[in-house]
Amino acid sequence: MTDVYDGFGEGRIGSPRSPTRPHSMRRRQSMQVLELESRVEQLAAENRLLAEARAQAESSLARRNSSQAAERDNEIQALKRMLQEANDVIERLKQTNEGLRSSTSAIAVKHHEEVRRLESEHAQTARTVTDRDAEIADLRAQLEATKQQIRDLQQQILDSAKSHSVSSSDDQQQLDFLALHDVDYFDSRCQQLCVHVQQWVLRFSKFSDLEPCLLTSQINDEKLIDRLDNAVLDGSDVDAYLQDRVRRRDIFMSVTMTMIWEFVFTRYLFGMDREQRQKLKTLEKQLADVGPAHAVRQWRAVTLTLLARRPAFAKQRDQDTEAVVGAVLDALSAILPPPDHLEKQIQKQLRRVVAEAVDLAIEMRCQRADYVMLPPLQPEYDDAGELTETVSFNADLMNERSGEAASRVSNEDLEAQGATVRIVLFPLVVRKGDDSGRGDDEIVVCPAQVLIAKHHNTAASAAASQSGKKSVRMVTPSSDAGGASLFARSNASAPGGGAPDDQASDVGMADAGGYI
Image 1 (spheres, one colour):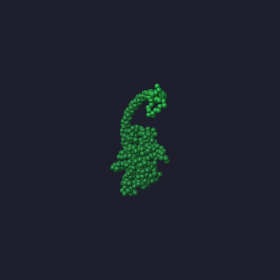
Image 2 (cartoon, one colour):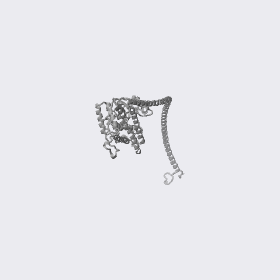
Image 3 (cartoon, one colour):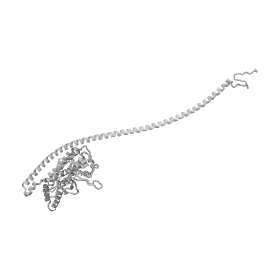
């Protein structure tokens, strides 16, 4: 066949083809096959990449899982070791607890037995103390009865001696004229004065019971500060006592008695003007240089007894008494001001106490024997202000007066223990010579009433401090009378701001020793 026809997939070679003419079916299929092959190759490559990534991921995950498993194993092993150690500690603590429980039980049983034993001993001791208290009360009653018998016998002897005296009529008249007393009388008077001063101090403190005292740093009076510091002998801080509403009474008592001693018991004769006292003192010294001591004492007793009966003397004595009352009350009020509405009552009560001290001082000076209230003990300090030495308790010269109910230690036991004196409440009173004024031996009339330091406060027995038991008369070393004198000072209570010179009160202190 000479003619050539276009068929499916064929064309005339070299024949022109239109650009818009679509490809033939075969060509399109060929192109699709090529595209599919290319796509298959691409997918195969991607599949290989994904397989490699998956292999890497699985390998990494396996390694990570292995590492985490190893770490967990290590943690488990560490926790097991810690658990084992904790179990060991628990077991050891259980054993310790069991041991402590058994020892505690044994100690508790032992202590219970000890407590029962101590309770039994305490009951026995309480019964013994009760028996001793009853015995002491019985002995006190017997002692008082014996004292009364002794006084009656002494009075009978004195009456008998007076009725059968062979002395001259002048001597007999002199015995009637002088108000002579024995040691027991002045012992009783001193004990009574001590009790009355203590009662007044108690009332003074209780009136301001809720008020605090001024401390030494708040007081501007140097002399008052010295009085407070000198009241404590063992080096304790006086402010510690002033801050205590109970213990401050001991300081008040010491200061009050020291001032009464200074202003009353150091006078040659309280209530006499200074010039006359000096003249009599000089005259007594001149007489003592040429005459026997008992004669000079007799002269002094007669002279002072006569002078004390003058009306002018009574007036001067009352004025000086009022000055002492004012000085004591001013000093204590500067430490603890009393309530205004009770000040007159306090002053009235103090006036009675000072008047009692004045009467006692005058009676002591009008005796044939020398009755002397010695200066209260005071602490001694070195240049640095440190206490040089303490005062040891002396049972012959002192009496512990704490008054504590639990105090069962005697004065002799306190001396044996080396107790230290803390505060002197009442000074020592001694007598020089016998009742007729002969001799120079000193005996204790009234022992110093003291308080001991806390570390020795087993305390004196309540019987010695409260029953008024008379101390044994002990001979003491010779000592000079007095120890202080008084300066002139106008009576602050006198009208017009002062008193006439012939009636001026001279409550004050000087450096010279002895009576003035």
